[in-house]
Image 1 (spheres, helix red, strand yellow):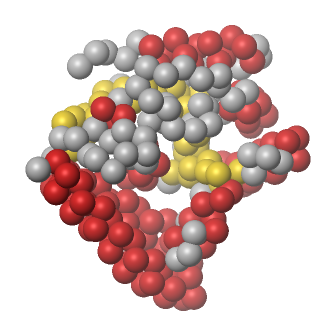
Image 2: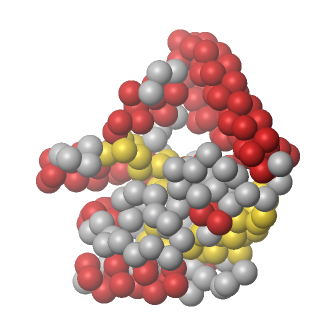
Length: 232
């Protein structure tokens, strides 16, 4: 049954993306100001399908730790494609920092840029970091909430990778509190897996980090917060 549900969701997700991607031409030509709302609608329907077809739901704790200021930086674990969808409808004006390659996806890529997502050239070195800071600063002035994955790529449950120091540079340059978020999406939607397993994905928001002077200390604090996630 898991194979059938996974296939049905993949078909649903493909057709939804295709139809909404084609329909997005009207947004790109005549209603650019609605691009973010349109992207939110796509992710909402995507996760609706995941819930209804694959019986995957979401439980969120720690809402009280989100800063009151309009902009901050969510530093989330990254275990599956689910993580790239879920924040779109949890925050008022989200902006993901995403790999630049995603902007080249037909139909979807242009809408990602139009809706205010922030591309990162992972091979660009110092210039890429400066561009990232510049583009994120523009987003902050637009009262966006920034989502970044410090691991740099999807990781398996329990896997440890060196966190990218750019998250600290970005936060300190723009004076953004870092909000660590742990997530166990890999239990239901493993990385690079076709299969989607029924269950609950737990998202746990931790207290914000505001002291950003020591890079190693901040990265260690992010990891410590992640490790505090309850075992379900």
